[in-house]
Amino acid sequence: MITKLLIANRGEIARRIIRTCKRMGISTVAVYSDADESALFVKEADERVRIGPPPVAESYLKIDAILEAAQQTGADAIHPGYGLLSEHADFAKRVRQQGLIFVGPPEAAIAAMGSKVEARRRMSATGLPIVPGTENALASLEEAIEAAERIGYPVMLKASSGGGGIGMQIIRDAEELKKAFAGSQARAASYFGNGDLFLEKYIEKPHHVEIQVLLDRQGNGVHLGDRECSIQRRHQKVVEEAPSPLLSAALRQEMGSKAVQAALSLGYEGVGTFEFLADESGNYYFLEMNTRLQVEHPVTEQITGLDLVEWQLRVASGESLTFQQQDVHFHGHSIEARVYAEDPVRGFPSPGKLQVLDLPEGMEGVRLDFGFQSGDTITPFYDPLIGKLVVTASTRAEAIQLLQKALNTCQITGIKSNLPQLQAIAKDERFLQGLTDTSFLTGLSLNS
Amino acid sequence: MAEVRSNMAGTVFQLLVSVGDQVNAGDDVVVLESMKMEVPIASEFSGVVKELRVEVGTFVNEDDVLLVLE
Image 1 (cartoon, rainbow over the protein chains, first blue to last red):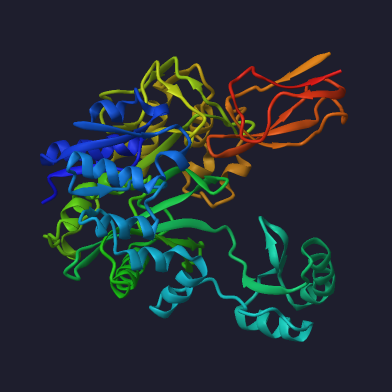
Image 2: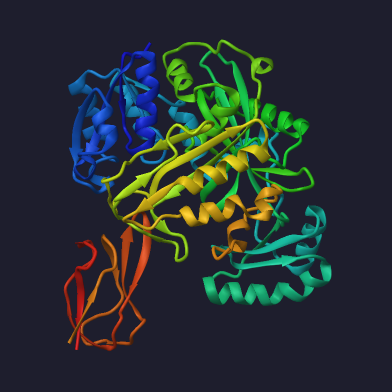
């Protein structure tokens, strides 16, 4: 078993990893930049090493400095957390070349899932459905109509060189396609300097649903259910829950076993997440795989009773899973609200001094994974996550009630936070009904 | 003469004006990078840019002067 773990991360996730290490009797090393010198995770680790000035390129992304800190402290393993170097195949390789344990999958699996196009091609070959579409540019209107009929309407007509929603049009039948085709080609040519168009299945009211998997080196794998993560802004999640209100038990089982099969085919090891778009008719399509611990992993821990960090460490040490799929049981419902240092109205960041951070400490059913406390300064150098408030109850309705209560007792002063937005989500009618597709936040008013 | 100040801490990511440019109140003049987001900073005043006090990569605190208008 690992005896001394260096955590190549910061904030709430570094603290969360330290917590499990303390319970397992593993000593911990924090690495930190000058901006985090007095941060909680630095104080709570058994040892600490400064690795550089505040910008991530000069500290948390500096592989040499991190490896040197490991050598200097005699750490035998490195946990990358999420973000930063966690999906950096070369980092994993260099950690292992130095004779240390990298707490994560083989670097080949990280690299294979790092390219979205390559990941979809490989995962499709293992039987995971991907969003149907045309692979090459459409040569003519006739070819487009033929492709649309094969894919099935509605379809999305997209410019090959477009992005961020620009140059996209929803097409519901052949007539609409006839009207749109030439114009879209001309617009794509003038906007992007390339008139190539392609078609993709248009997914109505898509939900972002993901499957958590856990595999050991001996080739055993289980899925730990799903998470609903549709409430997002700028592709960053705000509220997540497990299980997803969208999936039937049968669909959950199907997606879960396909994800495990796909992970086994990759030679995967440790925890990993398969992200899907799912619709209300039971269709689902693979988007990408995250080859690390997710920010929202606590909701899965809450309903399975498993500590995912503990299992990461055990599997990385070479231990086998001690349970099989039929031993994994889901109890109750869990919801996570991410508290961000940002102005929810304008969507702007709000760094500064956190004068008061008053949280519902000790409230039954509430878990608090936070990186800061009152009096700390939130610097502009890193992402705006202050922490995560996680509630768990026997039913979704009870979990939502607890979420409302917990959020209402929070107090944050000194900076702007998204607390008003979280409170509005928790009482939004669509959220109460579980109708949280990815456009949810666009339709949310903060004035209620 | 009017000073355009930053309303938050961050690193200058992009300068949208040069010395001699006419700026109208409400125009974005600088883009800051803060908390991994790009945030445009608008001028509260109208005038001609007399002096730039920052360049790309400069770290600014809240209330630091970005540029001077006349």
